[in-house]
Length: 116
Image (cartoon, rainbow, N blue to C red; front, side, top):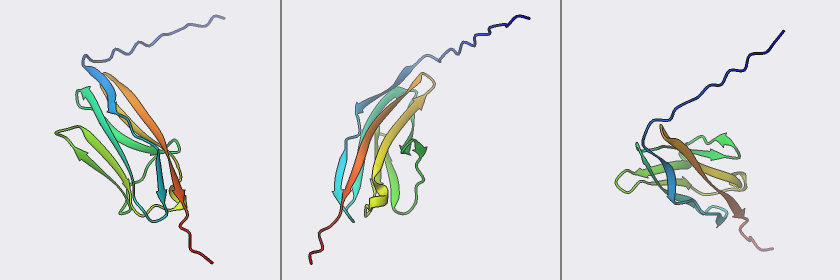
């Protein structure tokens, strides 16, 4: 008995792999404030951008939204009225036919002081 080794070579299309001109930055916000991640991404063809929280795809809703400015290639993730449940590690994932890139930062939500 013998084993056959098969190598699969995947050729990437020509173009420019995604790169972060402006990577996302860590966010420290007070409870109920907005946390905003801003990234600027370059690449050709234009990369597809997605957002990840704690290594899982981030589900967008009325409170967690994203914006895209296609002229400047700026992408924003906005967490409206942040809560302790939003604490975690966030990644902006950019991918095109030439490759992929990630930028990662965390969110810290500080409780509001309510006094005694």
